[in-house]
Length: 328
Image (cartoon, rainbow, N blue to C red; front, side, top):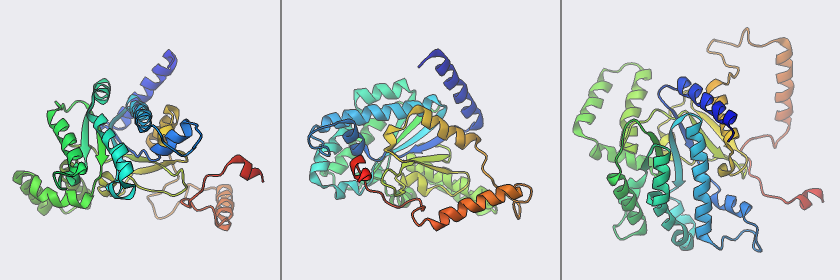
């Protein structure tokens, strides 16, 4: 990065921090790690991953890149889902044996150095589900490894927060909160809720309590979610934080390619639109004063053209095609 680019990034980061004094909090769902590796590695069997360790190293470096970009652009708290609980059951024993072992990397020297470089404390949400499983299961042992690492880490409130989401079942976490949260905290919430008569106050009270139960720390309500619709379909892959979002200004963004391919300049555009974009919006009974006759006509033509195209709906699945088939 040149000196001018670095200065520009520093200035932008300061603008983001001023825009979000509570700390910009994002969710970046990294789907398509296998696809990302396959697209970067040409071979005889184009879809095969014959070197799982190379795959894991490749993914780790790309993770480092997008995390670093988020923090350098002014982000403060980042949630990154790694595995859904369905992954333990849907992809077979070969997948489990090959890739689950690389979760140890999250607690290894390479990642530990990265956490310190980023001045970020690591957290692991969702592992309460793993710890609920039989003690001799691989999933339980993974959860215990991550819990032991967290117990040995020296946390500080002034650091950034990097939350890895692993196999969460939000309803399990919320159910378990009645047993794990200190009685004083439970009573404080009950007292506050009994006095609360404004929904604008109810939600922050509940979020603060249950997010602390889920993450083991306090973070603001997330501001955005970045996922991928590389296959056309739109999915939500960060179930724990999203289960606690209640609308508001929370934004969804999707890249049409695997999220790990996201470049810093693209992430900057996303954050700029999130922080400073001004969509046409009205909190009055209508849009009086915001539309001109010309704008209404232009928007009408656009909407009618999209309406007449049955394939304009966002979320329809796509199948990869090669250039030769497109030219036939």
